[in-house]
Length: 322
Image 1 (spheres, one colour):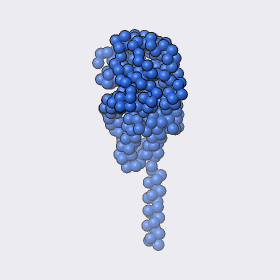
Image 2 (cartoon, one colour; image 1 turned 90 degrees about the horizontal axis):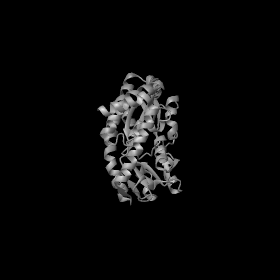
Image 3 (cartoon, helix red, strand yellow; image 1 turned 135 degrees about the vertical axis):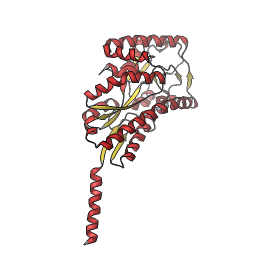
Image 4 (cartoon, one colour; image 1 turned 30 degrees about the vertical axis):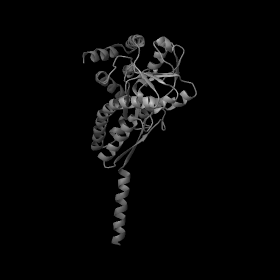
């Protein structure tokens, strides 16, 4: 009788442990071996450890749960409790999301951090209005131009099939006379293999992840901008957690941001070396190409300020004062 009672107590203890465990989904649009995804996976592991397994966060890489453009809406609507997005993908919804996609506004890690500090209070308010929290951001390495042929000026890009993944990259294509083709990261390799894309702007990270070197042989290190990924949390899901679990998420998020920014810097150099090893020619932009792209950046900044209004001007002013 006592043996049965002991078994019963044990079974009750196990069932209550299972019942107490909360499971969350965290979709992202990037491959499992991308440094952003690895950082997200480390965040999930940190939360698991800090909560003693009470909160399990499953990372769904490579747009396997939701396509990249769908992730923000999924978190907002509660289909996923968390998600990672590229902020500039949503600049048509609200121009402030696209501040870090403006060419040559912030063209170094230090400048990108200053821009983030200027941008962050407005973004936190916007996400709160949408029922979400901004947990942390991590920048991509500086963006350069991948192209099949050597180029000396923007005129050499005229008519080239140019991958666009957000409004800013589509606008760059228009301003240099290229043909914009919308392709997200998960479809980029196939788009290059089938000739849908001949050129695009992105980091060494994307170039290596997608094996761009198998199709395109030149990368011009323009250091045009450092777009940020943001990890968002559904506020209702967060509020339903107990205080220690909430604290664990906030702590792991802060650690992920610090780690991610440092990792992005380190990976930038690593990816450029890996591209070289795989036959990619890495070149600085010619003075003419640099001048042409700066002009594109100035045009886009003015266009953005017209759309972003007083909020956009406040960000630029705060950024320039730092």
